[in-house]
Amino acid sequence: MRLSSAIFSCLMLSGAANAFVVPNHSRGVSSSWNRHNTQLEGTDTKDTEKILRQELADRNTVVDKEEKYAVADGEGVASIPEDTETTTTTTTVDRKSWEARLERMTKKRAYPLFLAEKAAEIGEKILSDVFDAPKFPLGGEKEKIVVLGTGWGAASFLKDIDTNLYDVTIVSPRNYFLFTPMLAGASVGTVEYRSITEPVREINRKASYLEGIATGIDPKTKTISCESVTCNGNSCEITDFSVEYDRLVISVGAQTNTFGIPGVREYCNFLKQIEDARRIRTALVNCFERANLPNLTDEERTKALTFAVIGAGPTGIEFAAELRDFIEQDGPKYYPNLLKFVRIKVIEASSTVLAPFDKSLQDEAITQMNRRVQVNDENTSSMLPPGFKLVELLLDSSVKEVTEKTIHLNDGNDIDYGLAVWAAGNGPLPFTLDVIEQLGEAQDAHQGTARGRIATDPWLRADGSEGSILSFGDCSCVIDGPDGFLPATAQVASQQGEYLAYLLNDEFEISPPMSDDGVFLPPRKNPEIEGKLSEAIASFSTNAEEYAKPFQFLNLGILAYTGGGSALAQVATLPSAPPIKGRGKVGNALWRSVYLSKQVSVRNRVLVINDWIKRQIFGRDITRL
Image (cartoon, rainbow, N blue to C red; front, side, top):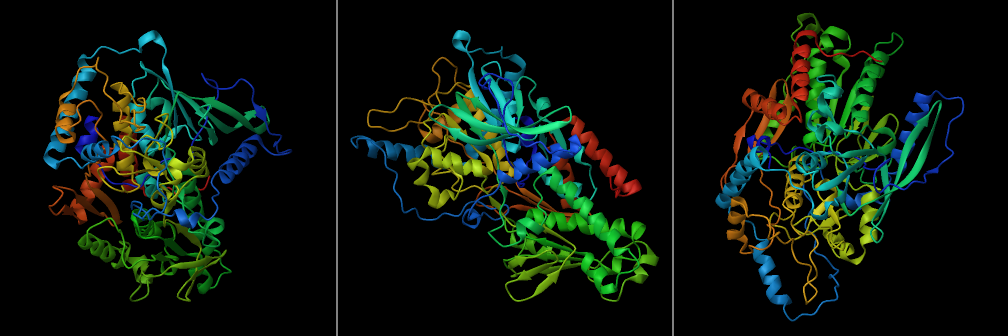
């Protein structure tokens, strides 16, 4: 575990990587590429590439009946009784005794011992970086590991994986890691896009990177099918290719789930990727410039400047807060005559906001959303009508349909809007569903609970893969682990990535032979590697010295920005004790310090601080390029 991970971590939406994917020139890549004739005649190369990339992304994000896979923003998968029993060809002689032992191994480790274990891991990591000599595989042949994704889990894994032992290839449609918690700020110009991204090649310079989208998998031949947009001169095309692996690490994250509501995908903006933030920033300025035209009525201006945020989880509330800051702080400078027409409507199907937070902090968030508008410019403030309300919270209001200019609610009300942002839930990618289908009955047995996520055991091995496929983050669901069902957040994915790198670096036998009675055993320790203090502490709890400890999540807290220099912080203490709560300026100081410390590199920290200073002095940049 890295030292920075022990400082503090926030429970953030993974966003982590939307679609993942593919290789180019590397070991395991087939030499023959099948080229699609999809060039667009008479179109600029840059525009052609953009169109083809969008086409590739669109056809690899469409999921039939996606509402059945939905998971709310910041929440885990609900436990649903499973109707199907796992069918395996095993004898039952020793199964009962093994199941009793497995139950002891996967029981939640006592919190004091777990903290001691984590502290020991930090010390071991520091000592290993300073004193340990490089390790190399026996026989000189490296195992080929293919990592799908560049999100939170994949980034943590890539930071720690020992490339002296493994031949690592990264496959993803984006060549950078994205700090998703600051996407809301990037969408209104609080920070710039490049300040919150880090090239994946900088995260691990010894790993190979291949750009593309994974479209299918054959577990029998250990091959991934991929697609990529390639350009040569003035023409671009979509290219097929395949990648072979010895062990596959799937961390492709999740995509936004529309719950099957008509019009959402066609007319709403999402907030998962840099492209989403860029579209929102452009659309935001478009709304103001359109409302500024002289031939519009006041009613038309109000419609154009009504911003609908659907979903009051962490993503929705933080975006609404950043948008409010933009309007209050920069609106008087750029659009003083238009502020009286601006409306922000936060639409939430449940009866509260920020579901993962304590009730008192939820109430604080509602108070912040409902506070009076704060405009420092007296001339602009005098133009606002009496009782002007910038933000309106619409709780217990579910969306029925979205059209080009109107949101229809199930209670019969209609909301005319200029810009709509959908931040209401997560769902699986088509590739994730293909993996589940290819792994067959072992996955089907758990889909009543996993709901479109890859079911894994407590050691993050995909059920039905015999350890050749490992998965973590938003695309997976740990079955029968110490923590139960974990939330789909960056903090969870990050810790899982670190844990998996630890198993591989310490050369645990990830795919041990089946036992005599057909049980797939946990990863076994390498007897030639000296034991560690952290492992000894974990073994005391699991009573299984010869096996790896299962993954256990350490909840370090959750944060949310609520606007106007105010934020919420909920820091976990003891499991049975109430959390430490912060709000207002104190919460904001904690929010800023944590987000700054969790940046991937010093470069990112410097750029983010520079953006904050620039915004304070010059305001946000609304230039449309």
